[in-house]
Image (cartoon, rainbow, N blue to C red; front, side):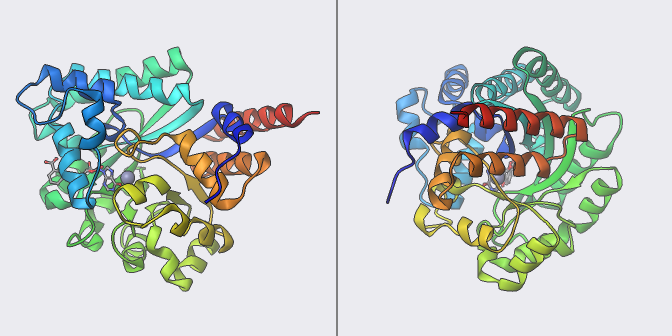
Length: 347
Ligand SMILES: O=C(O)c1cccc(C(=O)CC[C@H]2O[C@@H](n3cnc4c(=O)[nH]cnc43)[C@H](O)[C@@H]2O)c1
Ligand SMILES: [Zn+2]
């Protein structure tokens, strides 16, 4: 296994980037998790950031979801929500992320007793502060936690479509959690309502199940991008369809190893996706839980795809083009990427 050369790490560190697949609670840094755990000593989550490394070592996807929900249990007040969102934005800004679509699961918070309006105010307050203080533009994806069933689907859809509640920054609608035993077609009516309300469809699919789940996401949920889509490589017709219809994949390599969806990075199908002509974006998913960040994921992609600076800049522009940012915003970030790259490469 070769490593990514140092000069590419340095290039990636300051490259302006967009992050399209990153979870709100899954982005809580060890510092925030330990602060919240100390505030709520009844929780089983360790307060010591070093102990969190062991705590965040997963045996499989189901174990990951158990641990994830124990962190969800630490977020109990609107102030917890605001703090988490603001600190996540700070971490993104440090990595030169100019734009991020953050996946939020409002159902998990409202069912734990956080008032829905206070929840929306908290994330919006943090979004506005992040944009003015860090220059990072945040948008929201509300996802249904699929395993929690149709009650969760109904509640998430209501929160995403009711004009009196839905936050200004909401752009898309997703579906997360385990895929095994959670068929995608049952969520069609909820996605239909969200799409009718102007939201983009971005379900997880093909992370822990086969390519048929990706087909279901395309056919029944009218997916415009696929979260992960890892198993798509097993179906050549699906690869051709994703390429022809320019449906981007939100690839999260380290996440797939951490949850044991893929055995090793060298076996990750990202190269097959690129060779099939699919628009590939690289993302971090739940970065502190997986011991990664977006810069590390770009370094992984550079190694697996054998990218130089120009290739990395194209990868960053893929994410901007696949985003739901408005056209002037996309042009601004892509120009910034081009200027940065040509300055870096100038003799
Ligand atoms: O909140 C609840 O009460 C609840 C009850 C039953 C099931 C669930 C979930 O399944 C929540 C799953 C949670 O996981 C998030 N997530 C984070 N990373 C990933 C990923 O790589 N693939 C799928 N889901 C992921 C997701 O956003 C949900 O919030 C909750
Ligand atoms: Zn995810």
